[in-house]
Image: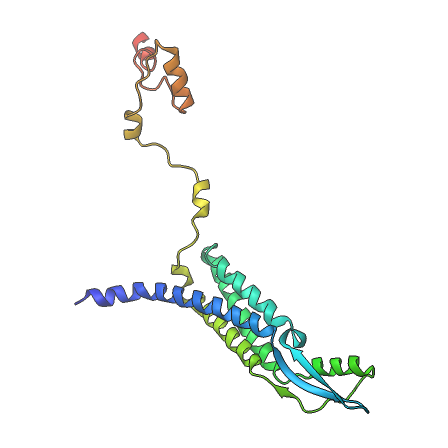
Length: 221
């Protein structure tokens, strides 16, 4: 009966890890996809009629896409670093999500991109545009930023208990052979030069504990 409370805390970091990966990847995808969609529409009037205007998310602001890429890179980097650096990277992921939410919310009512298009179309600065309609894509970008923010919060809370990449382990020095391993090494015959050369190739000291060599000094005393 006491095993369940003990194992429940150990499952929390694993669940948080899975949720952070899913939220971060999905959030970045939503932000990047929405940047290529139409966020607002309007029209500019001329004497002969009107010309429709459309502004995509990337036309209004490129910051949400940039922050989504930064957040995605930070999510991957969380597993490549440890300790204090992991906290810093997790904070960067959190800030990327928060910044995406703030900028996407601000862009929902922005008309600057439509006004610039109207000026280019008419050739006159300050051309008046008609009624502006907004799509749901800015709010999709907000949702993506919120998912990135969630991934950052989870990384800050549980990141220290997540596994890290072990790719650098092969560059670490191998431990020194134990005494048991040395004892099981092939016996070196001091009268056979080939045995001495093989021992040197293995990185061994052929004079270590070898009859006639390693103990010769003691015999002469």
